[in-house]
Image 1: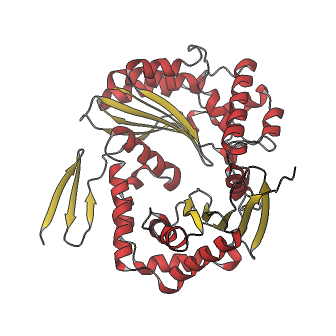
Image 2: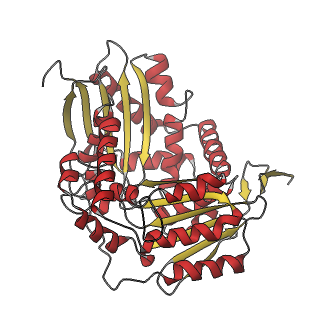
Image 3: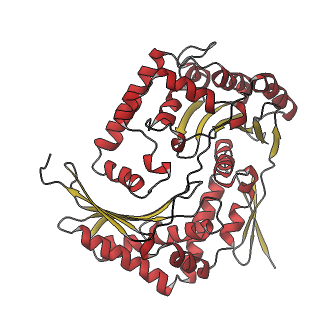
Length: 443
């Protein structure tokens, strides 16, 4: 069998005659420090940069009861002063040397990351240890960042025409699991929080035995290991237990419907949600293929049907909201002028039934796989992309080396697998339907 050999940004790929692509695995090294910190590294000296990701096993689902948005607020707090760093020092350590830094809060985790010239790796390891061990959670820092998060809620949720609908997708789709609270926060509950609450939160979750350090790029392994031990290895491991979410979302037993309204909604919209399996489930690969077929660009089924042919929607999509304890699979559409939410719902469910009854074509399967595999390979083209891929494997697979098997899992998906998962999860009793429209001037 003839094979085609391709090199993309240092990745060695083998494309066989049947379209199979083999990606050379990342050379991942793992170790755990005595204080519980898990360290994952990938040495790549092809460019003089390094990506540093500090991943904490705490997210929106871990918000204290009655304090929705706390994990998100703490993401902001981590950029404030420490015992040995003034406010915003992380910006100076990264941006002033040509790099960057940022952070994000998810339902299941919070991540902090920097990309800098590799000769600043030691400095950033010190800085990550500093804000893990010596963060100043004082009244002034707490009040300023709480206000920032509250304003973010106003801008991204309240001020956006469909911002509140996406909050409803989470809050109305879960009956018991804390995923229903969302990540961004609740204004009233944020107002009720105190700096003492924040200090308790930091001591519970921001600790070495609840974190992964992921570093990818230009370094010498021996020096990196020594620096990690010197700075992060000295952070004390608390003796208290780490609280974990144990609530299990019950299976749905019947369709549930909601009709929500708001003043700033220009066109009716519909969301139809289904409970998804946990992120580690083997069905996730087939669901990702289905996602591309249904919603992967203007040639996808939903766009072609609802937007292009029927012209009842200006936007129609399908999404997988992947979560460790079980996320959501949901359809979403915004009506064209003069069209109704009922028309959107009918057409979305018709497209669902079509894929359930008749399956997908070989051409659709090939195209979806090509898109997904191209995306996966593209993410590995630079150090930060590799670090992100490893981090997501930690978060959703519980194993950093799962990044090396993700393409093979996609390659193994068959047309029958796609049809099977669409029948398995998209049942009438596993459905929540949310109609969202203008309130007609109601207050």
